[in-house]
Length: 401
Image 1 (cartoon, helix red, strand yellow):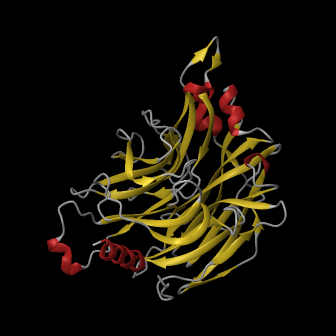
Image 2 (cartoon, helix red, strand yellow):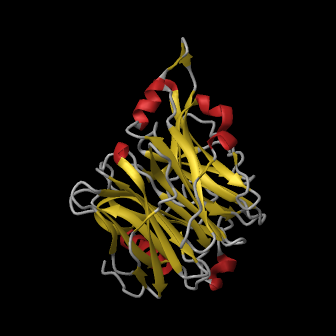
Image 3 (cartoon, one colour):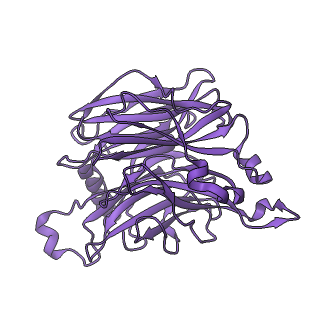
């Protein structure tokens, strides 16, 4: 299907692999007050996780469907000596005008697998903040002892996101996270076959002055890398939705709801509509106002919601390829996802979505890994409208019928 240039922007490469120097793990934030995107990524000396070095950023000024991108900047304050910085996870406090960029710092050359096998956590929880739209950043704050404390002895490792956090209507700031929890030890040593990932959230109710952690998912589904979005139920009450990569059931995503802002999530469930590739991949989710025409409101199903969801994830069943954008018009009902629209054909990996808030019609930005032969050759950016997803879904339904 030909792309309508009024609904889909051109694909722009934001970070490109040069020799062994690689950029991975995209995170995207939109600042409505400045009509500006902030694009974050990890700079690595090779594609391997253990070879991550530090975070980088580019600013993009939005003008209609075009974005003018500034130069690459190193996030010089988001560092810890002898550690590598990973998993950028930004969140914007609209009320205070403050950006928080969360990340983990991991001991140099210590892999995630080594931490899981030995049960020795090598990660630290940190953040930097900016009060001037990302032009300058604070020194790093290490929250590991303050927020995780003694619980870390049962965490083989942990991480945030990756991708964006979310501010709830209450003002609460939420950072999605996961940990590999050590459930069983034998003679004091962890049994890695019983060390499984559990998603959860870090949150702040005082504008980022203090942070707390919510309860871990209590389930056997192995919910790991995750993102969250706020919805509104039929009683006009807020509900926090979580979409996570599964490390146990590799062919299905994991979904869950929280009715207390991420402190405790209800029993997670496998999504029959959102499939994983054979080795799994991170995905991104955002909520946005319903695209249902006003003329159809009175005829809408009782299952319809005023909040819809968009989800980005590779659609190929056996490899990271063909990045799709999924639409869910009834997100509080299980298995309500529609068939995806393919944003990027070919190798595609991690991605992050951002809603251009305050605009009509609805537009999204997507920052995603892609390439000609491998999914980590570059990180590209593209914008598209909500109408484009809706039209693609209607076209698919017509072809199917």
